[in-house]
Length: 227
Image (cartoon, rainbow, N blue to C red; front, side):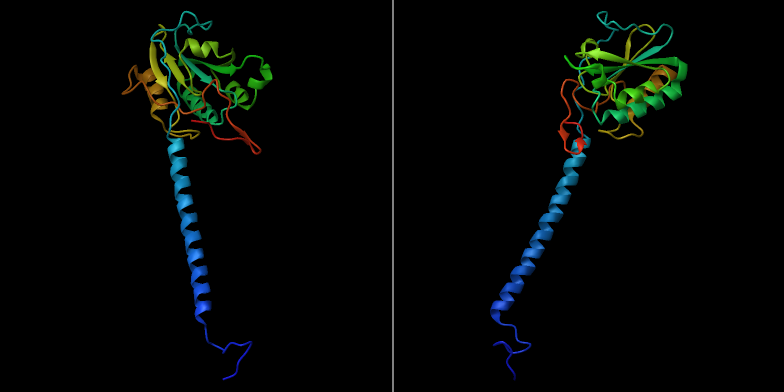
């Protein structure tokens, strides 16, 4: 039998087998770790999407300290938003559906929190334009979140519904999870309360950024809302 470079053709030495086994083990280990990382990532994303923000205690009656007044002869909706909360775009999309359904039976005030020292342009961005385009919605600058504080709102997207007499009917969010549009208990509750005068529930979780905390920013732009 001929010898090539000191090795017999077709013969795998024990050291070669060990190297091949080590390589296979390394490949298998890497694949397992990568798969586990993907699973963990999906789980964390799911938990993040399903984690609500703080739902403050909203007054049972329209707050006298507020500069806003309930709309006479109809229900009044109040939503407070962080102007740079990416999750809130979904809340405004759901608000547009609510207003299209209820039309002239509800007036909505959307409060855009403006931190001390910030220019109006900081608040009048994309979300402001979205809110301004919704019929029946009045966007307002809320300096230092004072109005939101009167209504006990701490999380962007928190929505309140008061009846024509100033009594609180609903408090909560109108999206099914963070940044996701679609059927939600909050949206259904508001529609039912205005159309039928009743709803199976009047409190729902709120998904969004804290009004007084800036969303984290990365090199690619604003990342999803913090918990």
